[in-house]
Image (cartoon, rainbow, N blue to C red; front, side):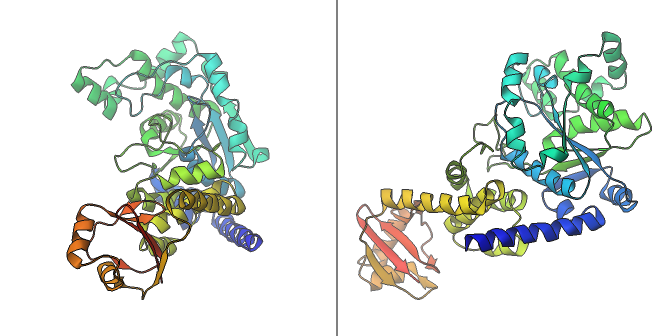
Length: 408
């Protein structure tokens, strides 16, 4: 069975790539997980319809020693481009990491030493190699050209932009309102990132939407030289509070996580993150996602976790991670022997519990619901709706000691 699923997934991927190869970009590629395209999708389509190839880069500042799933979603997009014959460059920002990207920061970043930076990126190649074909991936380090700039060069680059352009950044406006300092070196960051595009002679850059400001600086520089640069921004994986799932927020799923850890972390995500996560972290078809999300949130999240682990690891490891998760939680929270009740799908929970003498009355049911005393297992999700219907096999804990399994 595992071999069949792996073969099916690979067949889907090959067919998808064949479609992309034929027209350079498929609608799937452009519409799934993409936030915006500069100057426009129409311009990009025209470029590709002419049979031209992208020389596209993704910049990563080594501010931590592991890449996370946010990086992974962009690497997956690059993998498709790579298969379609486009040139993919991974730029390690070993110089810009010393400046510190102010994006989204309401205070200045701490500067990193060159030794810290080297230690951070030493395992990046192995992590990136889990997704990209390293034989067809070019790696660059921006210290190679930024270290060579003299003060006159920097003045020349800076003269192309105004202070007003810099102050358009939301985080700078916020700092001004709060009386927080903005340091001159933070103004230099987007200039240096912009110069990366000039130094590498690229015609496209891809990155998360929070990098739009920085990426457009490179486009402006190249435009002044008579060259076009496409900027492709991807959707951010953000939690219910609008925070990125990344290093800074301390809630990241890393590419170095074991399949079991990856699965477990995803199961801790809030329910409202699931639609976006399905879109940008998996290849699950849109219609299938709708069907999954219409079901029990616990089961939907388990499907999400399994799909993500299968995407970044393998189908076999995803199956094992799911089994380990179920076993761990069931052994911890569910007695070995519990009462089982066969039910008709779509039956009201309160009717089941009263009719089967699990509880005495519907009044008692309301009290249990209001106090959050009825939970599903193994994920301990409280049932708070008095009109809950049971549509699938469900394990319930009622109060402190009552456990039942409703079998559909």
